[in-house]
Image (cartoon, rainbow over all chains, first blue to last red; front, side, top):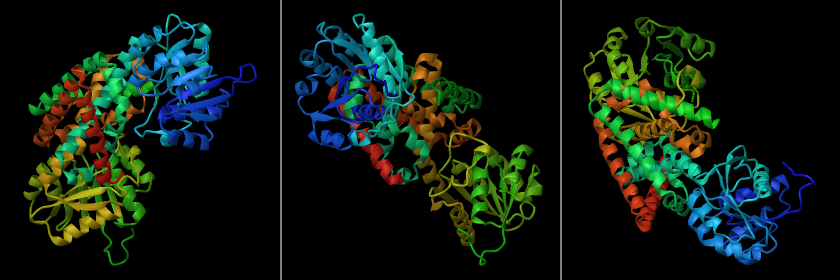
Length: 293
Length: 293
């Protein structure tokens, strides 16, 4: 993964050392590239942990201080924080700096990036990986390995910037995938935001049922189906609200599918219920194959 | 786990050598008790595999042949097959035999067991474990380890039978839990049958969307939320249809919870959406704690 001597000695600044930012720092450190990694974080505790783990060279709570001298800026915060930080980052970044984010929705971020001054080189990013545990303590150098890392270049993004962003994704062990923001947002609404909403509604329903006996019997089926309900609320709140239309459309389709199942069950229609369950099982196998798990 | 010389040299007959029956045979064989294990299965292939793996002493496709001489009979088939087999089993079983099942719903089975002739000793059973892969090939001697194994004695079930059933659950590595059938059925509707219905509707929705790009991006969140949609259709069809009322009630609660999330999202109500997502996250943590994962 080491990029060799042909690559310049670049400095990257990661803003937000949570699960995603911390794991990116750890993966890049393992790859030995970019050469220098600076961390910016609101809380000093994660900075101290990241320095102690050796995954950043230095850390600061001051955004402008962290950005000074950075060739690459990665915004690894919830989406609406990214939207809020972008203008500040563009003002403080050095001329020609690549500005990327890791946000889970891309349309609003890429639209905001289009308005940044011409001195910076913005590109949207979204690595398709994660887990339901949060914070730097949960970070993991292998989190990005083998995963798709969506990149959304703007029309203004230079080819050299796209190639650098692809190299940065590969250095983390990921597989770069170039997509239009709207195409990305509709796709992740289906395979990430809808499952999260469904998982949260499931966990909420069973928790509200208030039946400790049922809870004590909960096995791997419930554990896995409800797992993403444990995701970071700030992150998911921003994600849903900035991808509202696509998520609402998938929720409509889901409602229809569940109502179909429900009606077949309520009427005891054996054949119709079997057909729906079989289609779901086969559909899941097809998706697993396409996803490569 | 070995029960020692104080236990009689019992013969167990497991009817159905799929994931659950095959894993039970493997776990008992590892524990060295019951002494002799006979397998009954519709397809000879699984019998040959189970003999080759050394987890059964002998196998047959003939129910009556398998039951001859068995002190313990375990019906490890889908629920409606159990209901169909029970009268045949009771006729062919030896006097005093314990007759247990592993079905995922208990009310209909225990009601049918109450009608069996007085010569047999029926008790309902449901081990809370599983995975989405099916068949003897997926069986695993550790599947039951540490898991709750619900037992539903009838009013006619002798104390000695209850104690024997508990010892059989423990020999598989599981933790026996005595419950009323109706209490069991409502609890598992929440933590097993509802998650399955939701997972199947999710997999069906995203598969119907027919977007191979979205599929290729599917990460661990989708994989886990949709995992139980891959469960054996025959097993789950029977489970849902024999626990219909409880499942429909939980589906109503789920619909309400999802509609609440949806409305908060559609209206862009940040605080209401945050409150629901936070409650879901905390509820999931409480359930995880009660379940001991």
